[in-house]
Length: 282
Image (cartoon, rainbow, N blue to C red; front, side, top):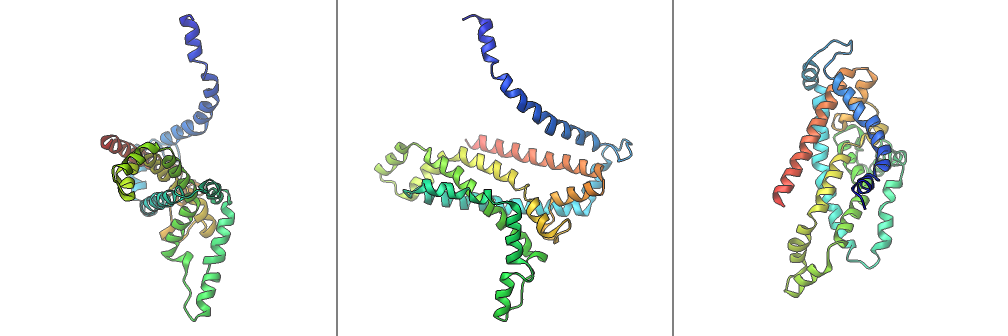
């Protein structure tokens, strides 16, 4: 085989990649490049330098949205990862776990509108839970107009993402060579020692993947909060997506562009830091 034919064979994958690359460029890279450009200009087209970034950082709504989003991520990420691992570990010990794996994807198939409707039936001022409390002479709780709304959002995130995360954990656990756990048991290790010293260290690549996916998904809970409480929910549920939506409606494109660049920089830095820490530990 000549070097020319080998070179052409090595490029045989390009026609399959080009449509995807074209879509990513058109719908991701170019819009982000335009946002980066807009972040240095006012809405009238005047060059503003870093003025938009300073105005955005000083904005009270931006700081509130950043705090709530960071708090939501800090709470929901470890809760989801740990609870999903415990459930996956228990399910892998069952003989009929294959049937359960199919059921775990059910929450992802439920439309957001249905989830929001369930929210309103259960947690509105005249909902089922407050009705039960009132029947026992207990004052109702304003779930959607108090700090409790934040925890409802966390519950919604866990419910929707738990099944998929459990499947990722189960894939990692099932993929572990049975020989290493059997060898540990032969050497006298109990189940806790096998879990802590054998399984968990070998599941680090799976943990890294799940952490990145969960971290990114924690920024995608706008639909539930918006459909339940609108553009201006209780302050504990006011997220970055609310801020971007309101600025877009008000045509504050300069501030929105600056905020998007700031958020991208923070997310990118967090992922790179996590990757560096992971590589150092490995």
